[in-house]
Amino acid sequence: MVRTPLTPWERERGERFGALLREARGTRSMVEIAAAAGISSETLRKIETGRAPTPAFFTIAALAYALDLSLDELAAACAQPDDGEVLSA
Image (cartoon, rainbow, N blue to C red; front, top):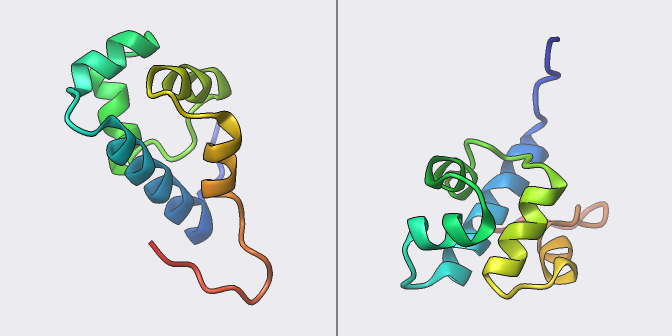
């Protein structure tokens, strides 16, 4: 199955999502958070660096729980801006 290339906005959204996770993780290790979420630390690293910009819903939900974030917070941080709004990192 061929995957459709991501748009620039989708790549930027993945980078913002990763930055939000890194900030929420704070001083806790990647290994600690990955274990709490039930994913590999390599998967978390890819998400945090934007190399996996479209993680599965259940991965996002598990990370939100491990980091004590609400899914609403994550959705708001990664929502597409209104037309004409300038994206900022």
